[in-house]
Length: 258
Image (tube, rainbow, N blue to C red):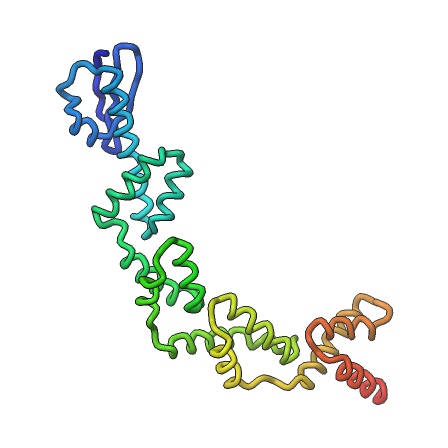
């Protein structure tokens, strides 16, 4: 099958036109490797080989483009190339080449991921570790980079607590603490460290918050002209973690003063 025409395209590609009218876009790596600028004719077998080689370079350059945007793990690159429907063997060859060329270095990725997590998020050590394990990195390799002073994690918890302290205006102390523990567990912090940091902050008393919330809820319900106002107030205060006995006592004392 004769090659009738070569046309240089953008993005390091050529278009070749065959005598049967077929047009094939090839990367210049393929053109040079297969000496196609000097070749006048191709067999079907040679054409199949060239197309497969071109698939490899296309996948390789797409992977590089992804890595240039941000560092990627082997798993991320593999999944991205699968979505584009590249052949499994092509993907394996690309991964092998990327590792050889230094674009998929696990130590660099793990170090960079932890650095970004510490700057851009409030993730704790367990969350960071699980994220990396899900990317198929080895636990012993991750642990080396997570040997970070406890003070770093404590400061991050403190920062989170200060951000969330405004919730004490609506939640009971118990409810607030439960929420904080659940949130920080999800972020990857251990209970003993969370409890230690919680013990070092001062929270407004339930009595003060309860009274504030009572009047706030009461005002909203009265604006809506809702009946059974007290039962609605009690329901909402219970949802926020206040004890029924304390709520009932507050309501009774307010009613006695009226």
